[in-house]
Image (cartoon, each protein chain N blue to C red):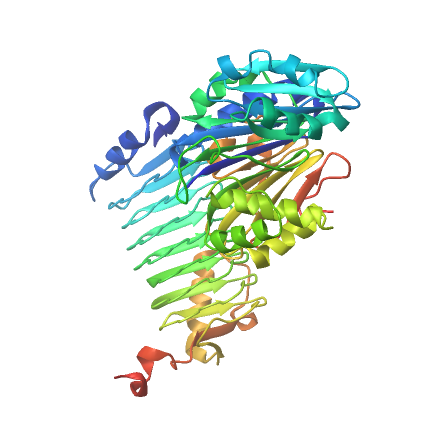
Length: 309
Length: 225
């Protein structure tokens, strides 16, 4: 099964409540997948800076002195905020790749969850309510975010198998469904030099989108071509710095409900996830069409049928 | 009228109370408030009662219904009125995928749009949709009638048996072995009754009929071993 939620705020007054609203939505979806949970939050931006969110199974050991060790390897300052098994490292945007290289030297057991100017991804094995509490997601503010609660079918229940997956700078993906051609596609992408860490099907979907965008596709084009190149069942919710997008496979057996008001656009695997949002009684509620790319952006007028850029 | 607050009292209490109603019950009209997209609301009813659900419902609302009238004043989730035997289910809004699937009898009226796989494997139910229906609707439909006042999605009536499909608008594509068929007077009479029952503002003469070409495996003796 798996449960997906997403919230794109049009009304900036709601931004301080983003984490709280997303947490409630995700907890409601717990019975669609209790294995692991994760949330991607698009928060505040500091000009010229970017964030690397990293994870360790032994944070007491790994995060001790990590900032000062990385500081020696990069230009400029680095600020580290530790939250349970995750740490957010903020640095000059042009130093992130250097820091990632250094990280694999100084702390090989630390894994990168996300890289973005505004994006932070928190994910762990466990129930949504416990994962959200560990990272204090309720207190987070932001412009938009997506969440996922997993019922594993294709690979092991691990932190790295949890969603969302970071697909590129400030981009992430969550998935409900199962891809059936992920083994052959993984081999193909690896031959092309794409790094894929796990045996997870969604990671292959994420790597596919990343590869398409690195080779000249826009996000919209990458999502459109995923309809041809990915075999299996999927409802994807993708986050970008300025918005989020939805695409479902042509069979569309994985559920999806959307709601839109003057204040927000919300996505849920089921309507239950949306029932406590403000003004939901008067929202426009509908089911996204199969094989159709939908996108909402803070940078242009959001409409339900707008194709991704 | 009995009013039941689903959020306060819970699903099991609701369905137990509705199942306890016999043919001669005095509690003939029920109102369910705060459904909030919950699953399995008013499933397995078997009494001539009227149940009004004030809001949106989740999976499997009014499944396996017998005799009862279940009226959803909102939109309905996947599998609404699945395997209905008799009675009436009315959805004021849209219905998600596989509405009326495997239904044996009764009437399902959807005043908005129905999603994919509407009436899949229907076995005698009448489904009347005021809006559009999604892809793969009436797949392997065996008997009963599907009326669509709007448009139909891809692969309508794939591998159809003897169900009758009436569509007023466009059909994106027909499924395997589904063809357009002649509208004879008996079909006009049947459709007029269905449109009346469904409260549709449409004329029978505006519709086309689709049915099985009877060429697939089980219809053709030359396919037998």
